[in-house]
Every structure is written in C-alpha cells, then in structure tokens.
Length: 210
Image (cartoon, rainbow, N blue to C red; front, side, top):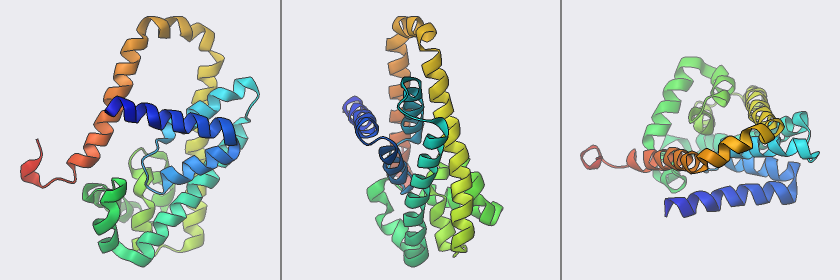
C-alpha cells in the first residue's frame, strides 16, 4: 500500500513537471506550501535534473519554486489569520497537520518571530507549517511575503542545484545505482513511510502510540 502511494505521488509530480514546465513546478510547490504532503525534496531535484536536457534554467526553477511557495504559504497564513488555532486543530488532520506539527512550529515562531518565515523555509518539516503560526500571530503581510519568498528561493535553488549535479554525474553514478538500486529504493521507501507514520502517529492519544 505504501509503495503504491509513493509511486503514485512520484508519478504525479514528474508528469506534472513534464507537462506544465515552470508552471507545474510552481503549482506543485504551492500545494506543498499549503501543508499538503507533496515533498519539495522530489519536486525541485527532479526539475533540476532536467536542466541538462535544456528543459529548464536553474534561476528560473528557483523563482518558480519560490513563487509557488509564496502562493501556498499565503493560503495557510490566511487560515491561521482568520481561522485561528481552533480551526487548524479541528480540520488540520485532513491534510496530515497534527497538533505536534502545530506546536513545533508555534515554538519555532515564538523563538524567531517574523524571521521565522525566512529561517523556517530552509528547514525540513518546519517549512511546511511555519505560515500557520505566522497567520495566527497576525504577522504583517508584506514582511511575511518577503521573508517567505527569500527563504523559499534559497531552498528551491539549492534543491534544484542538487538535481543539476545529479544530472551532470549521471553517467558516473548510473553504474553504482544499477548495483544498489534495490537498496536505494528500500531506503527511500523507509524514509517516506517514516514520514507518513510520523504524521498519523502524532495524531493518536498518548496511550495508543506504539
């Protein structure tokens, strides 16, 4: 079941990027930044990998990823701003936002204030949810957008650059991937299963967590 889910998500991401180009990258990053589980760690490196074929430009990908991230972040910011904490706790579970995720990002936001929108954008897990406490805390909108864009640009550019390096060294790496492809697939599956289980597990009462 998990393997099928992973393959479905990966195929959706790659086909969207292939068909829609920069717009597809922006849309996918908007979905991810709206706290819906689509990993940017797949979206941006795959896009960067395609630079070698002449399909994309590195700076173009960075901008597309940043713009998409801002769009998605504005959505979650608005949910926090107008709905407050009760709305997120009540309905967040439908997109795998657990109370643990909310508490984690709230602590992060209290520690760094407005800069959390920038710093959080380059941190896994935190980056997906940091706009919610920003909205709850009524952070000024324009600084929020600026910091979100700046942090997302760095994150998107970096992940796309990793994809570029993978593409440039594909001939060298291919022979190793063929030898260890089964191991690589297993590791990827384990990591994604852990990520999904973490979200579901944190939603259970303490006595039912095993």
